[in-house]
Length: 261
Ligand SMILES: [Zn+2]
Image 1 (spheres, rainbow, N blue to C red):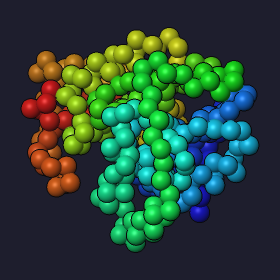
Image 2: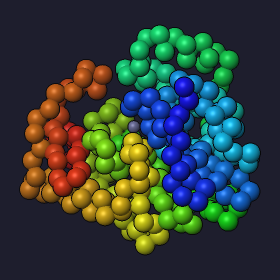
Image 3: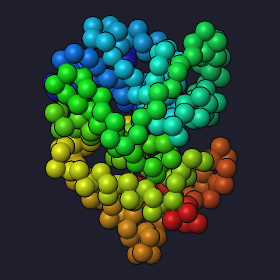
Image 4: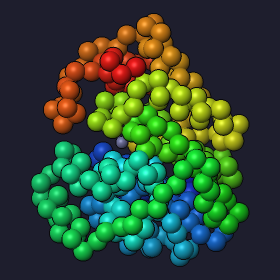
């Protein structure tokens, strides 16, 4: 088993595994490395990472959802925003909604021997990897604790679940912020667009051109102005309130709640 590895250029690799699991990124500088997200935690991701790099490394979560933070239990210390920690601690619970019961049981056994310490990061925090600096940008929206990571040297922006082309952006999860908060965060990312060319998202198997953010911002602006009205959708009960809307604009799709614009 293990993850499939996709090289994205100089010192950046994408690890992809089970369906619905997030993209895990390994970014290497001259003196250290950074692991962006840890997946479901179905397998020992720490062992895999240490087989791929001999550099000392740090681990960071783009947010606390279980498909991004389930592997945190393999590492002693994980960086994340303070608002992401409760979700990261509940990753196993969150994963119950998407993973088979036997996998959850196996993970529960491993959890008993593993735990992690959360180290908080906020706007402007920089991971210095040696010749490569990775800056944290807070982008509340999909959850309150979402962050993006800007790698100016590789001209890549790691955007987690806040800018994804391969699937709908979910502003309907219990941790989601109002659509207008999400829109402000996406404008904040576009404001830095001179510093990167592409988005390494939480669920696309190749980088997405940064122009995608124009579709995201136009779409959300039109929803707020009432110029674009989504279709009614029915969510699974795990989302709490099952009524929501889904809007599609160019190559962007978002699930949102009209009462939380
Ligand atoms: Zn998520």
